[in-house]
Image (tube, rainbow, N blue to C red; front, side):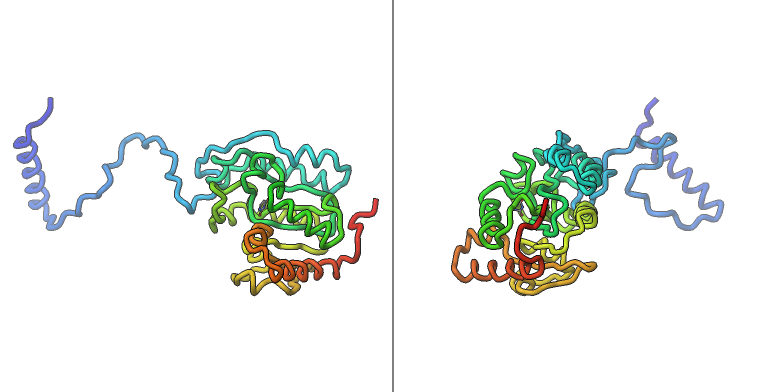
Length: 270
Ligand code: URA
């Protein structure tokens, strides 16, 4: 039977008087959370805060077949075989909230035997739709940079991104998204083992050099990363927005630093 308020107050007073008689002089302030239940409450999926980047965060990933996997199957090289399980991990990845809004993951593309790896920022709308990196307008300019500027074949270069999933509306990657994806790019670099890495844009430039400087300060020089050379330059999308002779000249100078190390093409001699 339910107790009335006055009955409850009486009972409470009696309880407090009993405690006082027993020498209790202070009572703890009531806890804000409800008292513990006998059976532990069902675990609620944790709130999706920005900081949560592990699969335990309970994100609901979009999982579809991977373009990269199909391409890797066509390469009959040991590196391609070694990349397959990594591409599979990326395909089903739920490390951050981007897994919920992607159409598909964009692992990377190109020849995994390449001595040149190009690292961009993150898939955009076209890449998210096709599952391949740099296939939109910025990608077309990147192809020109590789083929007309460096005189290499794009097919001979391996291209990947810092993030494997598209940030909604092509916003900048969040630091926790970069961290959630870090291991994938690191393993791609370790397996492909390129001689030179060209970072296109601020986020890959900072990722690869470990320096939190503006891209204008990072470009134009050669860094060392575990015995590999790293060169940073402006992102093709930035070049398209600032299509001046000056910007294009700087990109050309930067990519020629890479050509100076790699030598003239072809990059892969079959
Ligand atoms: N911009 C990038 O940084 N990467 C892509 O794959 C496409 C556009």
